[in-house]
Length: 175
Image 1 (cartoon, rainbow, N blue to C red):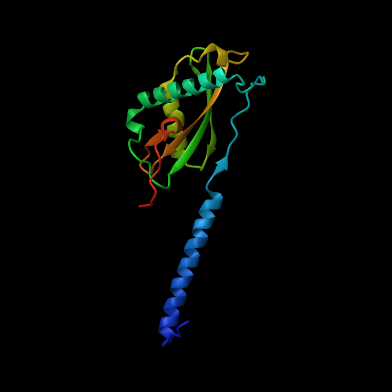
Image 2 (cartoon, rainbow, N blue to C red):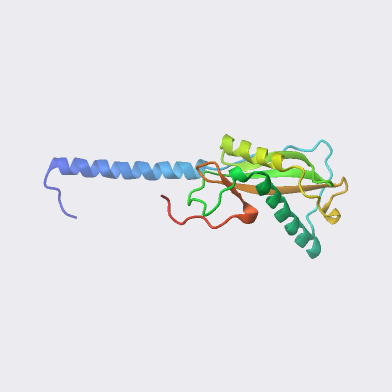
């Protein structure tokens, strides 16, 4: 360690060290408080629904999720992010929703979020604008004729989003 030749250099060094420590603590605080969990509302009549166990049902569900994502993107072109999402996303909003046999969205709720109310409103509104969604395959419907799904909206700072089904890899550096 090289001794400082003046008290002024020692003060400057201490100020820089304090700034670095404050920055690291701020980043830790943001990382620890970044996400919240909000469970979807409970249905009035609760009937257990099972995830598909048949491989063909799982494949059908995957194909249906892609069709749903395509419809959301088609009906909301001004909100769609084209290209590479930024390295540090503004928000990730997970929406849980239920559709009937005709593809009508019966209910929707924010399931998981970082608390960005604007992104939450946009995710729910873009889902509403896409309704009715494509009709789900009958094999995926529960005893009530409904299908419960979730989708992730990935938001950039400019308010534009990609859906998880079609998301491209994020940038590697923060600009």
